[in-house]
Image (cartoon, rainbow, N blue to C red; front, side, top):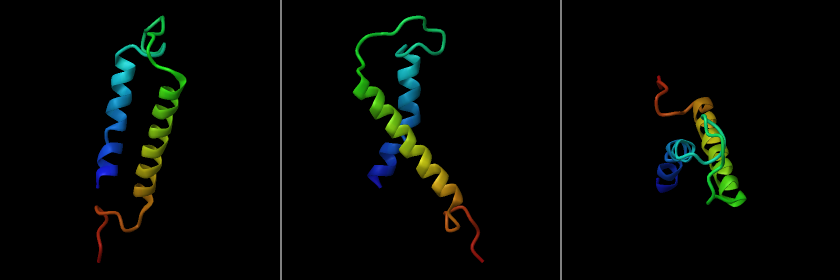
Amino acid sequence: MRILGGQAQTAPGLAELRNLGYGTGHGHGRRIKGLKRRHAELAARSATTFAAFVLDTLHDEEAPWRKTD
C-alpha cells in the first residue's frame, strides 16, 4: 500500500523539519525563512492523519498482531 508507506514517513519528516530549525522549538530562538502557512498546514494534517490511522489500528479487533482462535 503506497499510501500507508507514504504516511509512515510523516513522523521522520516532521522530526527533520524540527531538527533543521524551522519554527522556534528545540532551542531555536528565531524562525528560518522558507516555509509558509500552507507547509505548516500540510505537516499538521499529515500528522493528524497518521495518528488517527495508528489509533484506529490499535483499536481494530482484526489487527494483524492480534491472535485469532
